[in-house]
Image (cartoon, rainbow, N blue to C red; front, side, top):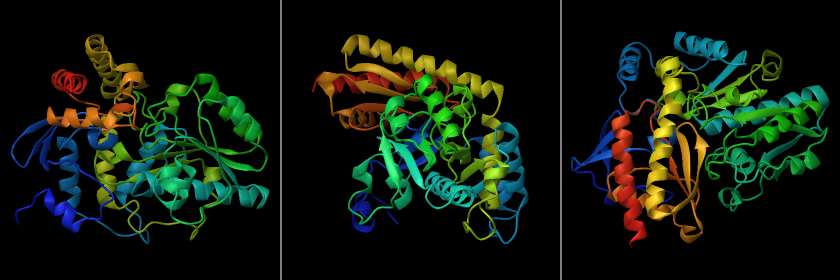
Length: 401
């Protein structure tokens, strides 16, 4: 079958508008399309390909497990799931793990657990969930409503209730809302889709203290910020703030779909047999690949390399901006970085993405005013330099258009 981009418009639901080229092969941080054109990948599958494309250890794990056992369901447990859960528990605050297939599913599980925990311990009136404006937690109806972007949740009928939103980094506004009827607070320890916004240290510590004071569970959505993305295994470790529940996905599987919800033994007790589940969650194939990804990422050399590579990109951004004066600041931490456009270029992030694609660089946006980079955590320095050269050409094209 001769596959073309035009086929997308004929057979796919039109909720996406993919690029004009079709990638067919990847290796490391380089991707080739149907024509054989080579691209540098600064998008990382939206922070999913934490070890790039076709990392040898992931390919080996997939191949080995693919010849053993793919799926069982949770009527049975399996060795890869138990190994991966043990490693996650040993490396974090958590004592219990629930596996699913995506970040949205991990967040859905976290929210359901929080509601059930509050009901069992404090009664049905303790059901309020507080989240943050411009937050993003997935596309299920529950998670998209908790996410603080109404454009994503409007137009589907009545929304789940008991959900309130406050401004990220505004501790006073948060303090005014939280009460003893709050069961959970869901927050990204580094806002992703909302514009790559880092938390103020006093804000995130204040949120933790107020949650403790009001017996509300603090849920960290680390779907994008976790698995080495900030230079720590999980972002909470660099903030000195420990959540009650943590969600992980994206880079956890290195490109293979898997999600996880991590929590303590005491809180996990509220998800008794039959209260929640997932047919595919924790299947041996996904867990075997995720275990290999975890083993590589949770190593001193990879985690230390993230900060060094961050500085290379920041230096490159600064050099480009000195010439073209496009960005007001570079936001983020580690290899989740966002170039915030200045007043002159407001609303034009997609123009820079399109121009980058024309220069054979894959990147992302985070809203209309931020160009986002989320490359592989092990991207070679040479690929960073080449990618920045291509990005400079893209910036020049937009500025001179």
